[in-house]
Length: 239
Image 1 (tube, helix red, strand yellow):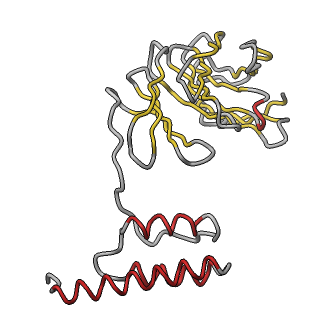
Image 2 (tube, rainbow, N blue to C red; image 1 turned 180 degrees about the vertical axis):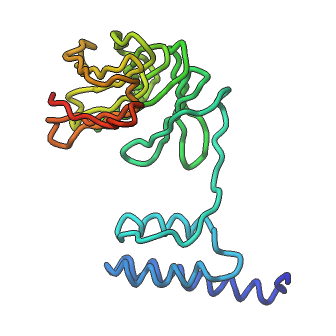
Image 3 (cartoon, helix red, strand yellow; image 1 turned 90 degrees about the vertical axis):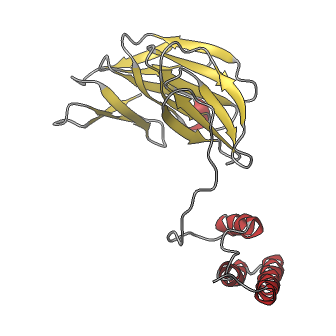
């Protein structure tokens, strides 16, 4: 049933009152109380996805632990790639997303406006993966063209190309503080790279099928890799 003018006015007043109380509670250092008011505001018909509510809820999300999802809905669609998207990841500050595609490019997106702000061109085949350096300044991408590339996140300029794998690169990660880059490939090896010089410091062998994923332990001492072997899904290497 469509709400009458009086009902709409009443809903607006209730919503505004709950939002005001929530802001007051947050300023008083009471985020839990603020969340209760936001919950009441969300229950007002027609205001479940109000931009002001979503923004305030995101602020509280940084202060309170999240135990589950109350709801889900499509907020934005990011359009621009001319091929299937193969990977997506976020900047450390959560302001931007970077996507890689079968169109051989990466794109940087503003999460608020859904606008593409930069296009990274240089790879000659599909992007397979990517990671942003811990300081949020650079992007490292992996590709089916058997290379990795280091890009300036602010300008999309390619600074370095990492060559050495004999087949497509399937996975990439970077150590804490950006000391090492580690890549995995269909050539069944992992490679450890110096980000500053693009030199391959070490080649890790042992898998008998394509490497599919890589991860580095927080202490930077070990690499965990996954492969298509099935019976031996992962192996530890020291670096």
